[in-house]
Image (cartoon, rainbow, N blue to C red; front, side, top):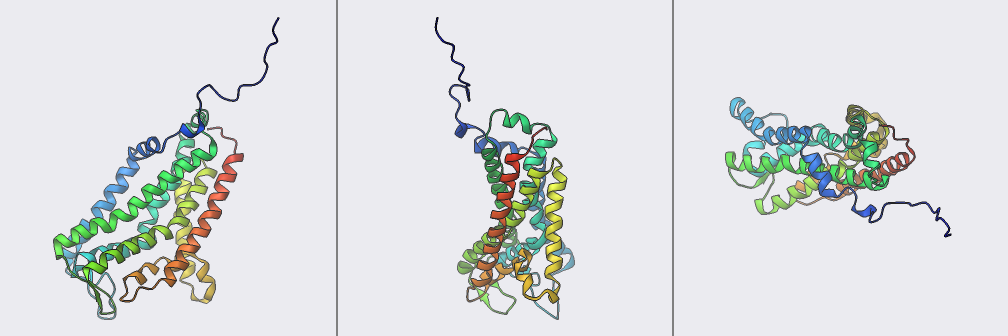
Length: 287
């Protein structure tokens, strides 16, 4: 009589953790969601709305100062820079917080998170996949606004040099790489918002709480940065460096502010992601 093997079976035959939840599957799931289409539609429509506003109200202008907004109608590159200026600080925070803050919490609110883990998808892999896709959609949102702005502005105001608030200008051949660098910095500066929203998403079953919490804290840091009495302490706030991308559009490229801002954002993001992975690994998933 042969002995019975009581060794527990850890997983089904043919199971490979590395094959669970492919990126393309998660990306398609997120792409088909209504909020993705709404955000994409709003960002795509905004350049046309701004264009119509300029057509109705006339070119913007102020006697006391000159900003990118006052130069919006100078050329296509200027119009793109204006939209990037408008989006920095709040408008682009919303899609980043939404794509990264809604991803895990929404699964919990739909009571589908435990079924994903029962597939079984390892928890760390689940988070890595969801954050990667959320970050990719966030990058797409940050790029979409100035890209469509460039196309709309070129069609409306022509192709030309990028005029700067200082009175100088950059040739279009130089302005395009500089604008690309500015967009890259904006995305890097939003990493802290993405990681914060993602951490909150792993800690709550309410998607609105995760998204709203990230947006609210972004507003708070912006308010604190406006308090000059804080002095050098403001340099530890991500909001302090959010407009450092303008250094890329100077006649002489300046790296200092962008390097400090991107480094600070990346450092905060690493800590917040570590908290997200650590907390989720120990969390009792009941929904």
